[in-house]
Length: 158
Image (cartoon, rainbow, N blue to C red):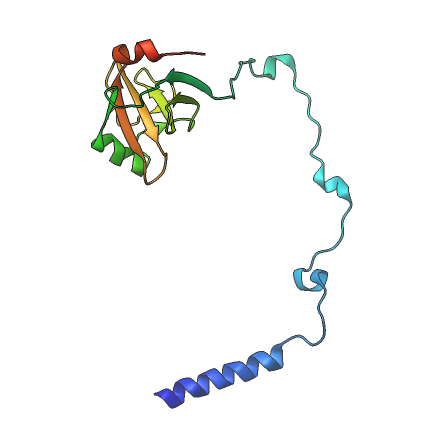
């Protein structure tokens, strides 16, 4: 058994050394790439008639703080283990990670609202009147749930 494996290894080694290219190879020889003009990098210019253009929609791309919690989340929100497991699987979370956020002394939490603002909830687990705080948006995600009415004094808005 060992003899057979050793023989195969030696035959493979000998074949690899015989078939190895002789001398230094150029990258063009190895890849088979030829030089072309730089025009292939330019996309063709298209013009659209006004009836074909899409309507203009304003987009907000910068994140914004919505809550300032000087005492942290203690007493304001509690951990929801079911939603945390869903978030870890990608079935409950923020549409844009950190788009809305809450400032606490220790860290920044992502925020989503039960009305659908920045909330991706395909299984419809959100409850009305709740605010969801996210610590992480990966396999270690932790979701905290707070009552919007209780959090309203700490709302700083856009």
